[in-house]
Amino acid sequence: MRGATKTILMTAAALSTLALAGLAQAQSASKDASEPAFRGLYKELVETNTTASVGSCTAAAQAMGARLKAAGFPDSDVKVVFPDEHPKAGALLATLHGKDPSAGAILLMAHIDVVEAKREDWVRDPFTLIEEGGYFYARGASDDKAMAAIFTDSLVRYKKEGFAPKRDIKLALTCGEEGGQFNSVPWLLEKHPEAMKADFALNEGDDSRLDETGKPKLLSIQVGEKVYMDYNLEVTNPGGHSSRPVKDNAIYHLAGGLSRLGAYDFPIALNDATKAYYEQSARIEPDAEVANAMRAIVKDPSDAAAAAILARDPARNSMMRTTCVATMAEAGHAPNALPQRAKANVNCRILPGNDPKVIRDQLEQVVADPAIKITLAADPDPVSPPPPLTPRIMGPATKVAGKIWPGVPFIPAMLTGATDGRFTNAAGVPTYGLSGLMAGPDGDNIHGLNERIQVKALMNGRQFLYEVVKLYADGK
Image: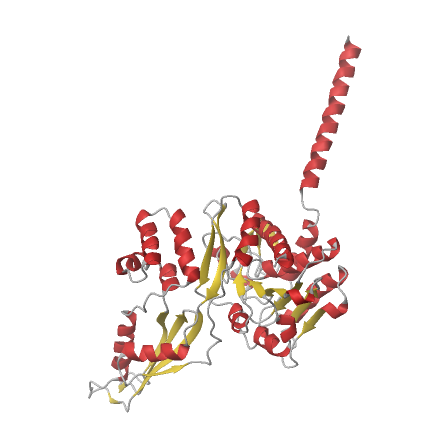
């Protein structure tokens, strides 16, 4: 009996070992075998310093280009370009050719430059990718090297798989979106127009979100963006001795005009994206008053009561109208003298399709003081209406989103900030912010200290873009 029992126990142990081995193999097979290569590519890109001060976009572009060539892309389809006067502002241009040259192209666009980061301010080295507690930490871990790495990785995967799309898939990893002396996108549109030519483009700019517990809350697609414009408001005056004050005071003129501006609201103007945003947001908004206001404003944009409720939230207010706000001021030259000059900067975020010069004229009416001279602080960026939100765009994205995030709302929105999409939209390439990369309620500290991205959110976004670009590439 003892021998028989021992044999039975040994057999059970062997079966258990085999079962565990089979389970391990099944779990291993269920994982994406290409993920380790992506992690290596992502790490290399993030750890290549691309700040405007000491970094090099050219080095990062060359590194990503080398990845594409190693996957089988010919040299003729992978180029790093830059103007002679900006040798560190290189952009990577690459193409996976489609079977039908007449079908038009998709442009995958992401910027590889990042905001400055000081090591002494961060908990971790900002230029070392660190995985901790389910998050990746580093400058650019999210903005915008996550998307740039995913696009590069997707082309590598397509090439290795032998994927032959109907239409060309173009990649443009650009430099200078975060500021500095040079933004490569306008230069690329002028000097390399064929590389940037496309039926439509995918770019950053969506506002996809995780909830407070780290679970998917909503998927967003950005359709159009506001125009950034600074205006100089200036009053000049002969001045005089402060012991003999007069009513004609430069500071008082400027203060009065700014007070009137502060009390003014530009009119509500909804477009297709903001209407869709409010329509769909109303379905998931827990506050009944806000949800009803969303429905009301879509039905009647002149509904002042609904607008007032929505305007309590600065983001919703900015989505509904052009906004202008004083951001800087300076005045006077001595504490015992009447001011000879008073000056302020007013920053406006202008609804797409509106001319910044017309907004200047409106500002003159609002401040209502001819002593205040208003000028544009710089040449305005290109102005264009939001791109159309068509079934060709929404269909594939909705299909893939439903598979990866079943039941999660997919909401169009207009960006109140700015991306390089303002240049491509104006150049005739409809550009949509679509990444699938969901950030936490705090925006994952983009541009701030200890920037991060949830590992699971990054991998989900990677799978989303890989699949949706495939559908776009073979679609009509």
